[in-house]
Image 1 (cartoon, rainbow, N blue to C red):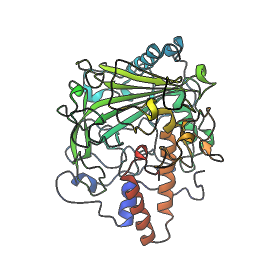
Image 2 (cartoon, one colour):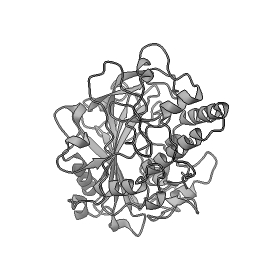
Image 3 (cartoon, helix red, strand yellow):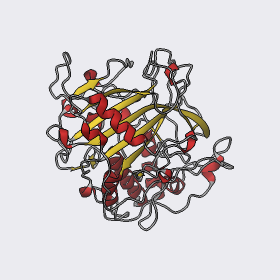
Image 4 (cartoon, rainbow, N blue to C red):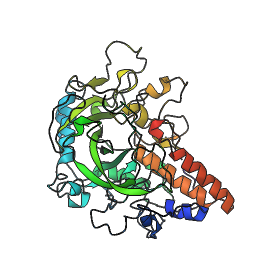
Length: 430
């Protein structure tokens, strides 16, 4: 469980300054980190928007965490409920995507997926994603994700590229987030069960250029204040930042659905921009193709023959999917699957990806909603954003309680080293 002995929390920037780290540097892209951040992430304040402030003289879009979590979810259409995910996976997941797109697309690409502009339905962000060197940047709230190594995205890809993402929850899921964080100084993971009808959606962007990933031609492009060296696999707190273009690569969808309550209770789907290598050229948010859908991990699968609980789109040919052909997106780890990663959502946090040499079988169970990955822990119902947020909160508390500046500095340096390898790449969570 999350430590509750102290309600003292700190932002990552504050923690770095307190630990004596060289957070404020010189040179292009570093001056913005010297700007003081407003008080946030405290028991009586709003949650923080980002790990650093926007760059000096920035006049473009600025991310504001959508955190007015409702206490009850309004009745809303669930168009996916008209389809059976086991027998109609394509129709099912496209209905979910259309639901996510409604009210979120607008002519100005930079203003798409801005919750305060959506007049159709509410979408919300999970808090405490602003901690650590992978934490939210300030223009679109993107967190740094797993690095794509050469040839993982396309046969033309010759270098590693950083990827970034932002996630959203609809009102049913946001009700749960609000309950977990009702006491912002003492979050309670026991309230982490998501109701049926919860939709979580994630937009994933890459710094990879069209020259190395040709199917990204025409992809929606955002500006983001990210690490200036897009090929650096392990940037740190003193690494310079710059406003760089990032292209839409992948969209992840997850739905809490009673149709699969006998398996896991969740349906996961992944889309890739342009249909992946050899896909159809086009432009805009709708030029995405489903990689597949899964509602179970096919426990005991021998590695050959058809998968029963994963349905892959035969028209999409990615360089890799998940373990033994299970579903995963182009950014994700080939040693895992959508469900195997998210099944580790618990407090304290579980290990997302099977460690090298470990028996992978535990990661490919079918854990029903409410069942923790590790016995004795609190299940967080397949919500990694809630799990990671709670872990970040606990890490901030640990920093604040450090008995001396030297101890705080050592703990901070340990966290920075952990951040170099994101959890989806097999790294540890704070």
